[in-house]
Length: 159
Image (cartoon, rainbow, N blue to C red; front, side, top):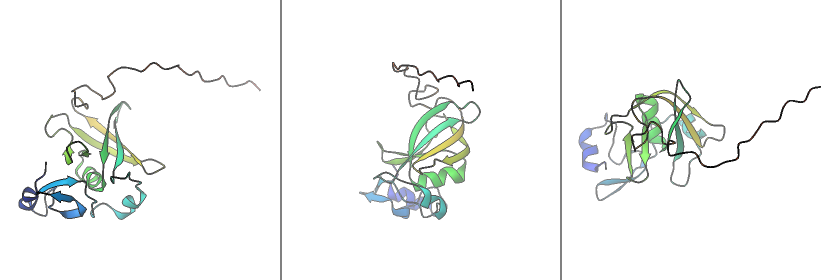
């Protein structure tokens, strides 16, 4: 949890700022995601956020196309991701920002970021070091396939 006094002590050039960007503070702790004034307004205008001000961020291994994980970003997390080369997410369960790998060592180094056609999902292509999942698995999608009928594409008709 980012404490307000820690953010103030860190100063204006740090990656955190006390009360800035519209963050919600209660009892000296950040309780909600911030809306970053530093995010390029043209990018911010294209985002379609949920009721909590968040957009889905899909992390994908840049060289294999492997889908690694899904996280959430607000404007501040996206700004940090775009400007630091490291993936920053908003943790809905802990109500704080987290840079992927700062505690686990399983880092994500940004290669590119794309916004989908609807503006509600980000695709973050990364160079993943270590497991992307909180379980330490390579991806968050290693829990097993669900039973599904496999579709078969129809053959092209000969004209």
